[in-house]
Amino acid sequence: MTALTIRDVPESALTVLKARAAQAGKSLQAYTLELLVGAATAPTLAEVASRAEAEASTTLTAADVQAAIDDARAAR
Image (cartoon, rainbow, N blue to C red):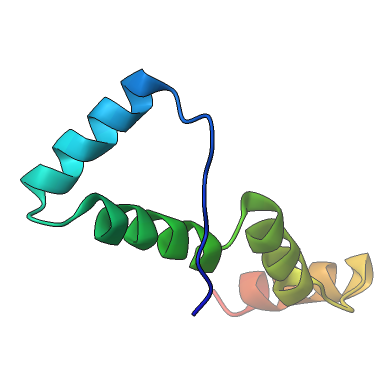
């Protein structure tokens, strides 16, 4: 595993991270590693949108949709 150094962390952010790590019963290193891994594994909004677009794409035409509507109405 590679080591990572983060410089120039604002003191206010560091204080919050330390407090949250302590509340979670973790070291600062373990807590921030968990945050980084979570951020790296969660899909971005753009990735989610791209997947949704790919899955939602269809080859239906307006005539296909109209035919399905007509069939459903006829079945009533």
